Image (cartoon, rainbow over all chains, first blue to last red):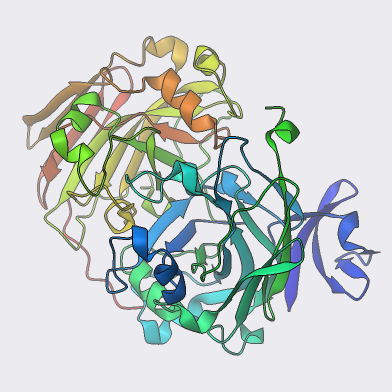
Length: 255
Length: 234
């Protein structure tokens, strides 16, 4: 099943896909553009992985000091970063390199504490698509990637749907791609994760109890390019969804 | 689905309770950065930090009232980082330092338990986001009652002996400036807590030791470090 959350006519609704757009729990059928899309579930702790695709590591190899044998590169984000499908993300006027990252987002369904990889998948509620923007101009080598790069207001896009885990036969056999203004700029496959989902759940749950609603952003493959004001960025994952976001400038925020 | 609930502490002003969102600023205490010396300009850092160095204490770290402090099951003990916690009262987005007081509800104490680590290159989530590694409390004191937040004594004792005597002064970014620089790119919500910064020289406590942390005018927290539990594998 696919479930979403949307705002419409003064209330927040559960929604599901419909051939003409979305169907609210109360029966109303609307187009995608009629509603305001929220993240498809209440987001708990946001855990993100850096450098978790071998092709992306190769892409960045000139500036990296790590190898794929190091422990997973984990960082955390706060709730203010998250927005939903068809939202807007600000590109500050003074930056030169802001890029999207198409990522499979794994949503925790059962508390997970010291879980072995072999048992990990039963703790997964489902999946959604994430576009986790970064602004490389702000990268500093202190607790890198620092929050000014990766925890910006509206910089983490989630949605449109939460897809139940049982509907995805193999989350490590999915194609990901990103389109900027209709042109494919990033392509990858979830089979190329360095640390797969069970390994990540085992690693994380060894020191932090994962709770329902917590999200693991599993990293992005190669093919990150700069985006500009006015660009429409679509991140999609086979069977999970197609997530739309538009880049806006400082003026939209009164800056 | 969301189980986040802020630590239940006495908060006699809006928004009446904490959100459970806690951010911290690393190396904000000038002597802490100075202690790194030339290393701050060498690899892997290559330059002193320009923006605030921030981290997240996620909800699994928050200690409930009365919950014991359990030693980490890796490393030698907890480094006890005591920081003033700035409690947000009104949505704080692009707040000028000169108007910081308008969005601050008050102040609390945060005790940030970390596994001691030497390198600040990576976010060190395994060392900083362990279960039960963040105490927030014992109350929120209003800004008016507290007075100058940038001049409060911080003391930590271990087994009754002084282990750290410092203060909230000497920060690279005092309360108002930190809030301005953080909210330039990330909005803080009512009930969120932003740690001003842990003073240099945070002591390490081990199993069986009694630690006591206090910030003058804000409150104190005392705990005996319990041995790591051997929990069944889920």
